[in-house]
Length: 231
Image (cartoon, rainbow, N blue to C red; front, side, top):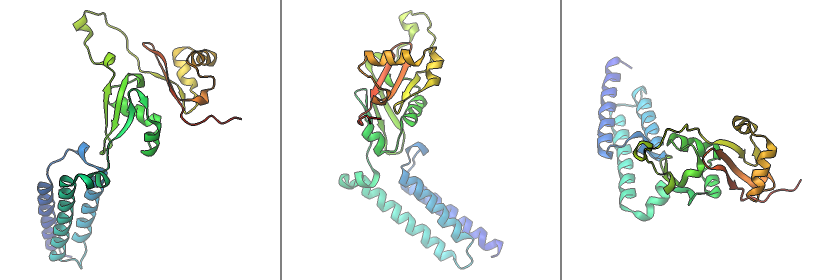
């Protein structure tokens, strides 16, 4: 294939991609749904393969771009106009935390474990699970959170309070397993942890789905909804 043909196909592909982008509207990367992302990958693969295929002429490239643009535009219009089809086509947000309680079923349904949930919270500058009233996993994979009222942002300077050293929550128990590193960080041992658990009605670590400790609130425990297996 000559450089002239490759150049013309690249120009056609460039113009076609620009038209598709303008037609489908502007979206930030964070707003893209999984379908949008896969669609963009498919489009780039489609254009790339057509450009360097000797048997694919200009007409096939234009047809491929036009037909893909038509499919994408039709899908966007259907999702935009039909409320009944919007949920099955785009999915719906999932409540991972409701009134301060972790929804373990929703975590499992979305293949999100506690470590991933805590990571997403830290990305939103929330370093303690106990501070969250609601957490919503959006259809684009981002996490929206609502803090409990007592943890809403207030500047200490506004209240004339002295500065206080802040540190993130330390994980004590995860998936029924005691985390020795977390205990070591706060200078405690397993016997102390079991005593704190017992005060909250937990006799076995396997009863605990997740537990964390902060200097402000002490030990915060999320009960494991699955029955504890007897050894």
